[in-house]
Image 1 (cartoon, helix red, strand yellow):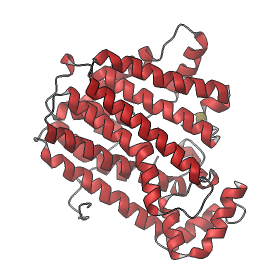
Image 2: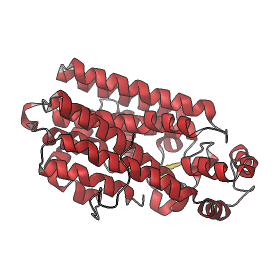
Image 3: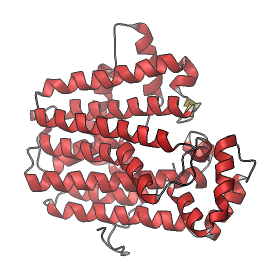
Length: 339
């Protein structure tokens, strides 16, 4: 059961990603170098594709979680492959984005042409596969069956999430429980794996490892809930990709599930938008007004806040440190995101 929401549970901090990660800035710079090294190849075309992906940037939340979790359990980054593994989880994440954009026919990613729109679907599929295999090849250097088990399990979960979403794509009648199954498989399990790998590399005991694994799951769930809300409330310029695209791509998000609970007559309207891949049946402003009228956005954000609160509570099992406090501040950053 999730921790009840209270106003003083989450630190009242105005964080940007730069502020949140300032404590580990030297390690994050090394991660960038490691990502560039791991994605290099003797094949020029692969280097072109990898360069295009790196130029798109990103928040690097997942490697940061790996590093912060390692420090939070007293790990010594100079005595383990922490930077290497932080780069590995970022490569896995990038591979999922490449494959997601193919499935969704996305034309942009972070205000740049997606790799599939720039180089074609066949090159994008193969590049995503190459990133997966390169990540696993690098992780083998750790000679850690525990880490490999975590990576294998999370890769399977992410694939299961994609298949679950594909099965219900275009349907407006999915239940909240299935929505959360898809969300957690596609997003939250990777957050959880990042935190757990950091803990394992830091020599954490079972209690600390479980706490960080649970923290990552709660934080990742809150992160994706907010991401889905931003698809309605933000703009293309801010998001770096088309706004309102989730529904056009046939994916129902939590606020829409709540809208249908309050107004079942909207089912045919939403179904038409997904079928026609166009907001002719109802305009985006009209849909946004309906969501606000029925408090659907507010309810979905409340769920995100519940998971953010739970993430903070999970960290109480760890000893006090600047790294634990940074991890505790991240849920507030997630809730305040605008892109």
